[in-house]
Length: 91
Image 1: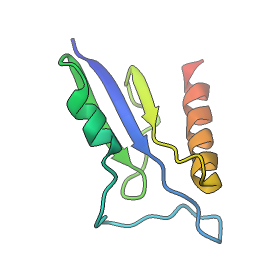
Image 2 (image 1 turned 180 degrees about the vertical axis):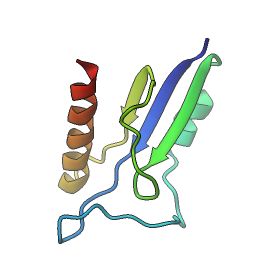
Image 3 (image 1 turned 120 degrees about the vertical axis):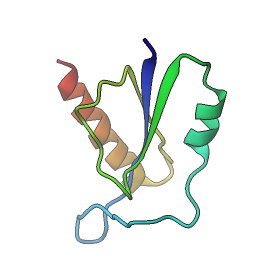
């Protein structure tokens, strides 16, 4: 049975406090596809770009990876919120 990794690229909030969403990206981030390509066989990889799709907090993934650009406080804040939500599910 393969172990599962869920990589999440968080979106950020707009000036009204709503998560920014769209239906397409012209220049998608390459961090997770690169890490997925370097991951040893035996792992099932899923990538969630939150700007396009909602995060499934009910995932059965063994590992959750978040891509955070720490210089962007909005990005860091949203990543912390996601991490805390997964932490709640852990109990």
